[in-house]
Image 1 (cartoon, rainbow, N blue to C red):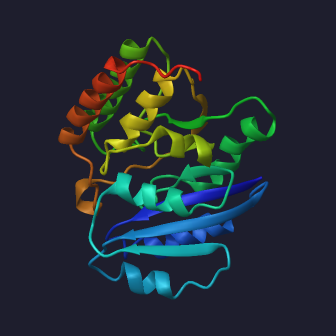
Image 2: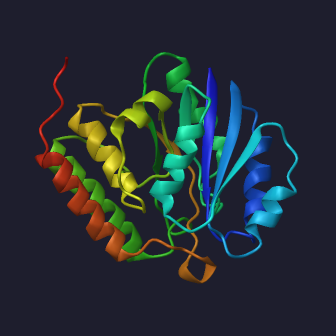
Image 3: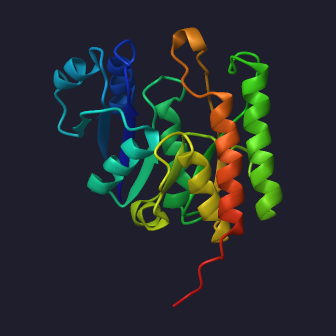
Length: 232
């Protein structure tokens, strides 16, 4: 199996070098590629990416910022692996956890795996951020009669073909809710494994806001109202 690690990047010159180093240093249990989409960065991100020499790395550049969902779509369209996982470049997630997400797939116990963050005082920059995340996750559980622990997690591992079939339209952070809503609507329940997490604050470049939470709930409602796909 080959795993495509998809990394959307926007103005991360202070972290991108470490993010790449950490992702490429992991001892993965399968072949990997790291597909980085520079989503119209206006700082030195592009120059740093151009200096990295590793055969496993491919860099694609958007001339203008289009949003996380759009960057992931570009990465997925060019992915060569059978499976994919999203890894943000902000160092909030530890790529050393990726083999843990792969384990249930390689063992034949799961097809879709989410990394479930356990928020604590050391891993969350804001009470309202945590409550917002829990609120969006609860909305998904109520709407789809499911029980998942962390809808907004970046770590979503699944077959590339499955992600492509979801036809994700959200160009920004709403893609997280759209992916989960479409999976749950198809009665695909993610297998969850605990992961480590260290949130950064606004002063460190945190981009998601309360408006993204409102959009996520709207997207979940939209997906719940859609008719479930039928076979054939």
